[in-house]
Length: 213
Image 1 (tube, rainbow, N blue to C red):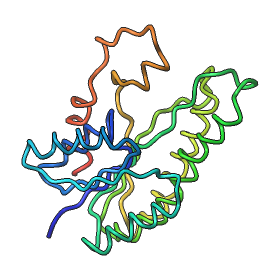
Image 2: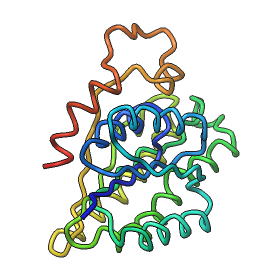
Image 3: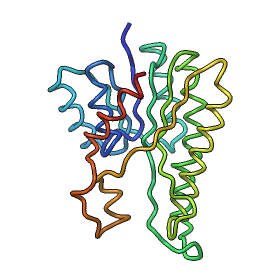
Image 4: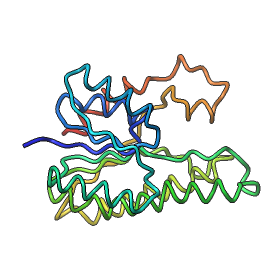
């Protein structure tokens, strides 16, 4: 039976690195909005003799996520693994200057879409599958109001699901990656010494044994 791994937010950063790391053992279903980046990921996976299904979709579009999960069920009938790496990182701003559009998009991507995906993916994972969420504890930090609040809400959803699924599954895991030299972090910390940070590839290699455990 083919092992399947759904990666939402697979076009860059840790999501892409985890997708590539999983390719030797799983058929990767890679979801992101950026088609070109997904095609680059597919080239990388194929060069390592892996296989992937590319799904250039917006996770905030409910009908698209229904179509995605129905397609997974029709083709494979199940999922072994779901890694949710998709995130909207709103521009840093004081709490009293957060833009309405920035907050709305943060809520749509980080909270509403996550809750819908939990509902749609849970039946595919069943009792034995695993869902992985990636924490980034910024709640309460200066200027991180929109990002910190909505990322914190996303993890709160994951924690509730984790507690609720203890007896009957699926397994829900919440991991906190080390600081990485990503484009998102560069926006948050533009003057930071990037040489002191780990790479998404190295962090994926560190996290993968915990994910597959």
